[in-house]
Length: 468
Image (cartoon, rainbow, N blue to C red; front, top):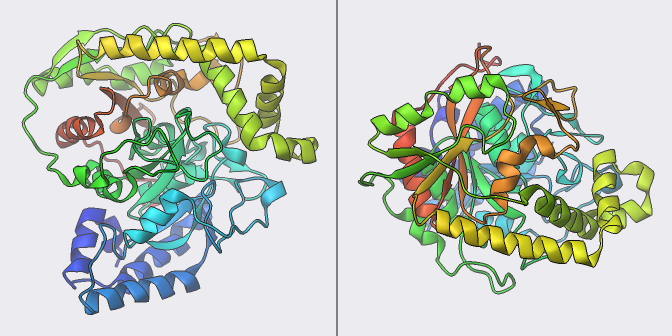
């Protein structure tokens, strides 16, 4: 059973479909693993084993009855605690929502369930998803499996740890400013921020925005593609959703890509800590070894910081403003700051941000006429102390706000392009460092194929401290 939890989601789904493994047996193995390692890591914060066994048994009956099976049939999953889950507590890390039990599922949860995934609970997230450090007053901090004194990143931090520590074979999450990519980098797993509209989000108060998106994480690119078969595809309630069905991600990943044109930047013109630079120094050379044409270049992202700050503040006013008005002293400081920023800024500020984003997107479109992939660090820092809420300096430069230290993710968010964090290396003191690959607009499948090429050549492994 201990070996079972280390198997890929693709293998496990095949074993269940072929009656070599039951969903109940896999659930037994995952729950046993959770019991052993989760107390140290605090990744899964709500667990519903009784419900999970009912769903697992139903999955096994479907196999026995010869029913049609979804792509994720029988695979256990815990959903990010920002996603609504009918009948299962959804706190969003806020003490004001500590006892909230939704009556409906978020769209991504609904689609994962329809694909046969077995829900076992919820994964930890920062309060209201604010910040790439997973801690909150309801459940406390989630710890990095490679160093229990370090953060796992966020805001999909619990999901990344559950994967890295082999508690679950698949995981979901969401990403506004790096919340799938940053924890993937910090935990040595794979995290994809899909293109605008690839994985629609509902309920959604801003269905035409595209700044935040649902998405998935995995231990391999193939496992990521398996989940995208279930969660990608249009929804009439989300006007920006792309029309391609999720089935496009069943296409082969191992294909001849020819000479891929890579733009490599070691920093995107931003401060990056020396430990990250040193760990990723090999990247351009390795890409050339893979047959890629590598040029040091980056897109013109002028104005990205101010644009992102304005649009993010607007989003937090919409999502967190009512809670702030109810009890401002029970909302964490960074959330208060974002909401107060929204109320300080004017409609003119918002108009300029929208125009600036449109111009930025057009410049990036032109950039990808010359290149196929942009490669850069996922994070500007290595995993930092779990007791630190956010880094005050990066590369010797002072960070003004709690989101400025992750601009290698937030600036990329504004492009609307698919972006994936891939395991790349370990720092001198044994901490994971991911590389971020950004694909052409709406070319999520092409990006996954390139990521698979990288994965075949570079798959850094190191035993986590919980297994050492």
